[in-house]
Image 1 (tube, one colour):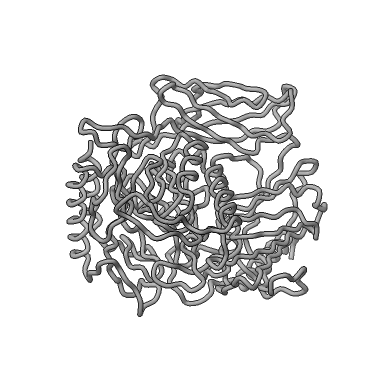
Image 2: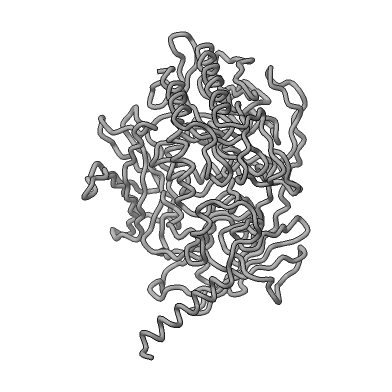
Length: 607
């Protein structure tokens, strides 16, 4: 056997061994994309489209794992293999086990740093780990993090060896038995509460940088003054550092230069855009390309690829005195589904990037122009797909903690939520991190700090801080109440049909949840013997007729004051059967052509 044949034989043997070590766990419902998941193909796409460098190393794949009582300091032996980045409770992890608040989840894997990275700083990135994580490289503690929804980065350069490096991660997550934001996770799933998500659930990766590098970008377009402002956060800012931003239009064959500008001393770069700059909208989701370069002493020491959109979210009164939501200084009726972002096989994590984009594209196909991302935050690529496909996003803060009594028909005058100081501090920390993470995403139009009264506290303070921190977006104080006269929106919930039972003459009044029309499709349910909807029908025709009936009711209420609406929901979720699609995304439960026609009629009726 010659050397090439021997190497090929070894590679095939290793690949077969890895496949033998992995298979989805359990017999739960699967999507069509589950069959494409393997240790070699676990979310291989570049995970940070908003700030891209050419060199990187994906650490997704099979890791060792162990579940141990909380407090153990080291692991002598692991329990088996887990496929990262799928959470341990999911089928696609290959494990499908609960962890619980009394235990900790340990991960470990070996890795090699490419020799071409020698002499540079090495950054270790985690897309998201739920909830408290501690990280070691070669038995050296390199960092820790709390927060289940945002990326974090650790410089691990000093802990690295030339070869044979070991990465260890320990995670503790009490789910809803703790004081952190958890969204729809519950230790005992039932009704509207779903399976816990513990540990790594987004891509783990590494990249090399120089001593001075760009840590983050915050991009804010100003269509009224034809400017885009880019604030580049730099490590070790020095007097001889300069940042340059170059804007391009995408063409079929090459990038076409549009404009450029520079700054020093940490000032934002202000790029003057053409007065006829192309504006982003759901009908024309145009994105400008952008290169951001960092110079030190006149020499380029870092360069990242990014993008942005020229667009503006605001409110204004129409000729009838009704406050309307506006995009690019024109009234728009924002209409879309409540999107939980759960997957029957991956739970918080879509099986593939194609699957991640599928829900957004189908929402577009259904004729909607907006998605309310419900008490969950998605990987960066989900927002990139919304940016490029033209989907406005209302971004919820994942809920957590108990709230006061729920009041829906007046401004709240009862006792505030009783949260511990630790719980309040955790909420504020994670809400800021979420806004920082998504600050530059063109698709984000509305921040939603609270859902109904779930963990709601100090609403005026939280809303006013959010408006101050990001004045480029609208703020919906509490979707569904409790209501306070702050922010930009008054948001009502009503099931199943639309109702306008409260109105604000100074803010936009919206219907933040309605619908929930249920239909069970045999062979496509999470638990065959269970399932519910706010109303339930057994045929596509009945569900579609009811959906159209509600949409026609909505149009009449738009004339009286509604400026946006959210239908529940994109897909079934565990035992909820309220989806436009089944949980496995195989069956569209309504007549797609009819709902597209009525959805477009709803959106156009305001224009």
